[in-house]
Length: 122
Length: 179
Image (cartoon, rainbow over all chains, first blue to last red; front, side):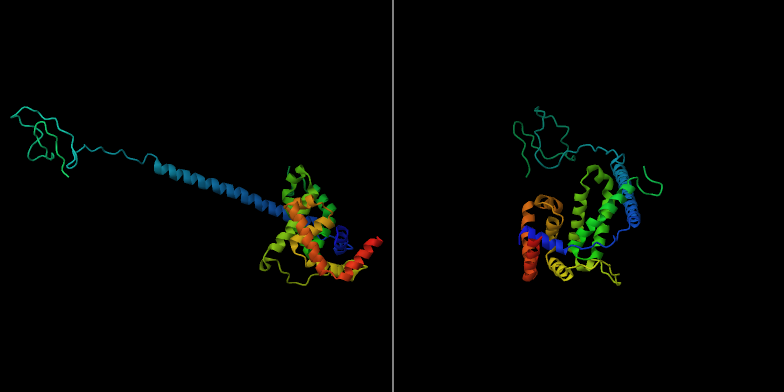
């Protein structure tokens, strides 16, 4: 079937006589206006809702991260009871007692041998 | 610039266009679906969509091509919908009166054959041979490539040839030679 034959067939499938149009312009306009109003309502309502949600979200977020953080109290440092200790500077003079080495203190065990390195407890 | 009755300022222009173009658009819709009632539905869907985009479309031009594209897309969308989601007519529809056609039986059989062609191929055939569009214009209207239009057109014509009675094809060829 070439193009001319196809055209003849399709023309035969077309209407010989078009009946009066079924489209009423007034109905078309009223339906179109209704749909346009509905769409405008959806657009305006949607953007207002989105704005309100954003405002709420920003308010809540700002309230959580704002001045609610109280200043933390700084605890004095406590010497650790275990672990590697830096070498204490001891008074090398014999007979003098070290003020930090009391028997009841919380100081770790330290060897006081002059010239030797401190041993670490593992 | 809105009219006091709730209508827009361009509505007169829109109504004038609808009145001028409805018969040709309706005929295209009829060839696509083979039924005046469905053609009227397609026409209404098309003009309602046109109403929504009218101000932008008028500024850009190419109204006829856009309307043709909307009719074909509305037809294809309607056919793509599942059967259960389509609109079903429950009441008896009034008969549409038309003038008696001279070759009524032949027209009916051609319409029945065209009805057997798949919707996409039918849309291509209608745009190419009823609206006399070129391959490129048809491709633009359907949103596909020119190669797709050619292949769909060839397949559609093959289907139509299969569905048509060979004697009818001979008769048509004879009529064409006489014309």
